[in-house]
Image 1 (cartoon, rainbow, N blue to C red):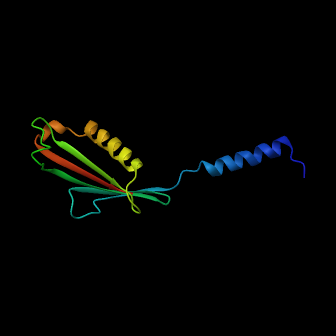
Image 2 (cartoon, one colour; image 1 turned 30 degrees about the horizontal axis):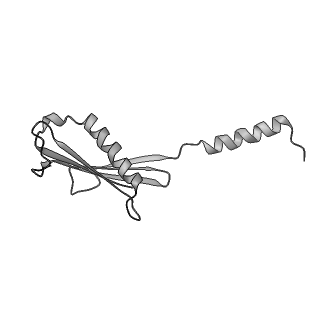
Length: 116
């Protein structure tokens, strides 16, 4: 079978449209009872669960008299942690420090735990 240029283009467009579809996204709030805030976000087969505690007491060695300390943890659902998880932790920590008014709660800690 010889494909014409228009037939080939039609097939390529159909393939492209199938590959760029956005997977359904959903979210739930306050799903963990033992923390101050929590959320789960799902997109397709991917899911992330986040729990937040704080402001809470901080160890004296980590205490900052001018702002709260933000501690982030990223854990994969299966297997051990990877260097990629550490990169995610650092990115999450930097993001949280930009959006949280850390000066409002000096000498405290906010813990953000993310499970994927």
